[in-house]
Length: 341
Image (cartoon, rainbow, N blue to C red; front, top):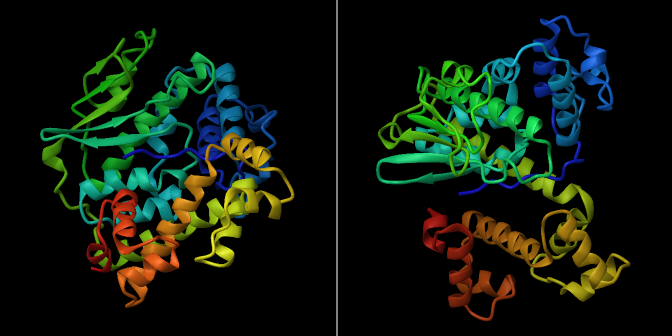
């Protein structure tokens, strides 16, 4: 299971991570104005509930932190202070889930709501589960920034699992795809596990024996309500930004009547080639958007109506129920009856 990163310039995140960096560097005697320089974030907005920031702005503040900070522990300290309660609906959805397995799964599903700077993947094996960070050093950022983000991200994961479990629940080991830095002794100190460098990729390993454990704030109704809210927030982010948002809105305008790419491009006053290029620049494609809209509508119809599978298939433009069921299985891993509950 893998997360998807948002566009770097999307201003859709509360500035809680920026505020944490400002606080930690402030304790080192660094002025907030210097920490925020060049980011486009004003000092008086970092605690403003209405303020929205982007991943690019957060990365700019991290670069300032690297150049200004007098302590290599800075990203670890920031990560240890970023408790899930700072993440709004995303954080509370994770804290109320019904098992630690759900926590890991939903952490990926809703990662787009958490000012993500790295793609994360969660894979469960018979004896262990592994967080993987496949693009940690492939995003075009400097080595210094990549390592800073990894150090903070890994510490956040340790902090968040402790928040959910209600007790210390450290990884069994942590792996890093780069050579041990001069401050390598800080890694096990903050992560609470053996740390290995010069590994094939960046990973956090957990014993699968913890996955059935129940979080301290687990509550079925709360979990359901908050997860539905997170689903809506992700949907709003998809449909409100960029050319991809315009295509989503086109597809949702008359559910069941899906224009092809040529027609959609015409409605948006551009050529299909331009549309393809602009969607690629936003990290998606026309086919992916159509599939996503169909999947959302299929799930909604199955959960809220008693329409037959064949009727839903027809509404979504499938030639027959069998093709629809195959697509549904590919999208969700479930059949119609499983989604209906």
